[in-house]
Image (tube, rainbow, N blue to C red; front, side, top):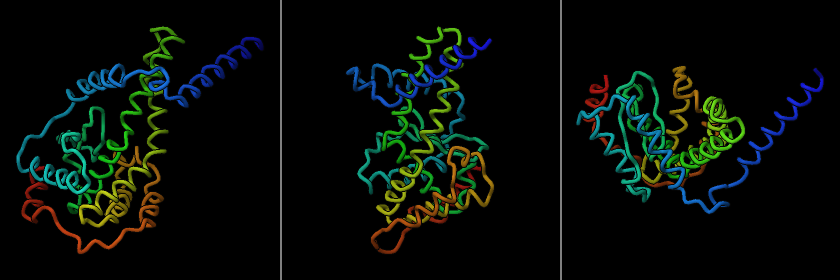
Length: 257
């Protein structure tokens, strides 16, 4: 029995040692693999699965205002609008997230919950920052490497289950490591748009006060993140502005009911 325990412990240490070593190496670069070989194909496959579960909104009173906000953000920050694929989903979960294929998913429940366009821009800016900083693509590549590694170690039978579990652990660790970077970059995006960058902090605090967990589940330590944003220094760039008229904002909120 003692020998079995020792062998199991050694196997576990070996597995997680290999896993840790794998995450420390940029295997795509080391093996001279072009991202399209693994990352893009995996992205395309997963996006098709994800897209089928979305209830896409095509209402002009919803799509056009959101497009205006994203377009203004891209122009002010020299981002290629073609790099951002916005999908508005009719969903009662208060959430927005960046995902594979440079897609930005915004749920109608999130739009309804926002008190003003600056709060909505803060959420959009945070997610656009994830895309522009390469956080999503790097996670996909890591997941692809882990899947291959687990297949080699366990065989096809258990690799899918282990990859899913390990992938979630990796995703969580990446999220915690990258959230502050996306917050700061998102606040800079807002400043360039002549919007109050402190709305990034206000939005996090608003979610906290509402007790909205669906968005905060993947965005831990919102109070601490808000404090970090408030410590950032921005040059004065004139009075803050509105992008949408009050009438357009009201119609957007109504259309998302």
